[in-house]
Image (cartoon, rainbow, N blue to C red; front, side):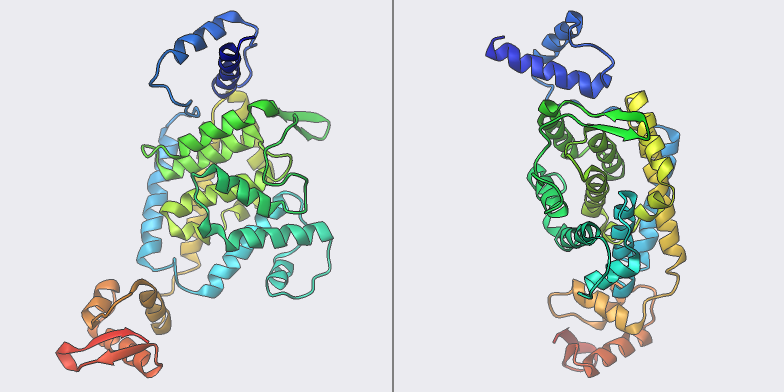
Length: 363
């Protein structure tokens, strides 16, 4: 086979995997002919993962958007560091327990606090690796394939050989005595993953939908020998974080962990249908419920100290009481004055001038 023919044949293989999910044999020349025609069109740069946009998906997108607006209005992104820490521990615990890790939330908390924990060494190492990834999560770019591989290297360090590298052999998923899924050949993984990261750069796609599509497609491709499940959930979080910071601390994995059989059932259904529609519906429902739980458990307004802490994270120059009131539109002038007075007394901020010409800055 000539060099150009080899490249085209590989593209044929790749295209059929993405579009037809192995339903057609590559030996059938009419499909090869179709691909030759497609290759002649310079406008085709990658194959968009298949899914249907339906009323269920649109309903959840609308509901999630409303809830994110409410989260922002209540300043839940930055309030209560203890709650944020607890939620991140829940995320790590749930994602690892789906993969069979036996450690409890209390044990994970102890590991985070550098306390001694008795448990399987592999489980402890999985937690240590996950904590390392989440500590560095903000340094990763969601649409960068090298960062994706770097995250896998952190996540699976000393757990498997060749962590941070795509698999070089075939894999399948077996449940009991039944083969649930046969992943694409290892030789095609680089093609498939490259396309998936090109898709992530498509600015016409909603992040909520894009994150679900990536999660499913990554699980379908199964690019690594191990760690695919936790990487899929981690990267969905990172994609969402890029637009909605609250997802750094939203433990939607807990709802997946509570009913793992549904998670795998939906993945299997999408494999059979050859598109991710059902998985998008499922994950959006999970995200919507997670936001509802967050709002239900966070009804109290931020305290005086929490307000000041939130505000100081956003300010880099001098500010006035009016600036403070503009940020917290639901408090009175008297409350703003008290907050500022207390912050001055606690040496959090400096006061310059008096009365109407008073300005403040960080200490």
